[in-house]
Amino acid sequence: MTAAYDSATTKSFYNTWGANEWDRLESSLENQINYRIHKAMLAEFVGPGDAVLEAGAGPGRFTIELARAGAQVTVCDLSDVQLGINREKVAEAGLTDRVTGWHQADIVDLSRFPSGAYDAVVCVGSVLSCVLDRVPEALAEIVRVTRPGGVVIVSVTSRHGYLRAGLAPILRLAGAGQLAAIDSAVTSGDIVGINAGTELLTTHFFTWAELRDALTAAGCEIAAVSASNFLSAESADLDPALLADPEVMEAFVRWELEACRAPGAVDGGTHIIAVARRLAG
Ligand SMILES: C[S@@+](CC[C@H](N)C(=O)[O-])C[C@H]1O[C@@H](n2cnc3c(N)ncnc32)[C@H](O)[C@@H]1O
Image (cartoon, rainbow, N blue to C red; front, side, top):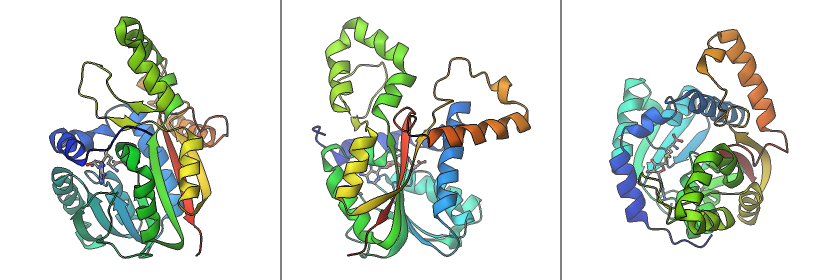
């Protein structure tokens, strides 16, 4: 990871992006399945009474899930706009009493939160992808505030999976004079200097080996890993009508959840979700 993290740019991007972030996980069938896969992982590792720090919580889709699961959630995000939406959505869901507070904080500096205070730290939706060269510091902070034996649940954008899912448009850009920038992104994982016609935040797309090594270097052992999504990632044939029957949908989600955890699939979805347990000492 070589690109330098700039918190002001990231904050401004997510302040402007605003409520679009709430809509994202419902915006397509693929995103709805991505949401289901994340929820399944959270349900497996977070339970009633757990103290959870949700870092980069955004508008609160997962805050609400964690609160519904009976956890006591502390919310933090870099963006004041996202924090405001989070507070509103949690209130609309009637779960305000399950959130201990909303804090504007950067994952590279969680110094306002005490060491070892949380049973789980949840940092999903490519928040780590945003901090570029500061990933080691961010993970050190996330692990510091997790109690020994507690879990860190992260999800990041996948380098090879995203390349696979977005192959045609990516090759189109490469063939239209942007080969050097695309080649550099594929080689380094840093998405920088690409003109895709919309504003692209500079972020890092991970391989599983990179994420695994960063988590173990931060003092954790891997408890679980999954792609998200694998079967349904940008599948040209995936017409929502094919999954309109709820029974077919449920069976499909079951197949997807199993496929995403297959060793050959972990680098093949648009995201990688990892659960890492903080080692004692
Ligand atoms: C793609 S959204 C994901 C939100 C939520 N975790 C989810 O998955 O629905 C990324 C969020 O991370 C926040 N963020 C980005 N960089 C951050 C940082 N360095 N520290 C804290 N939050 C950050 C953004 O403001 C935004 O709300």
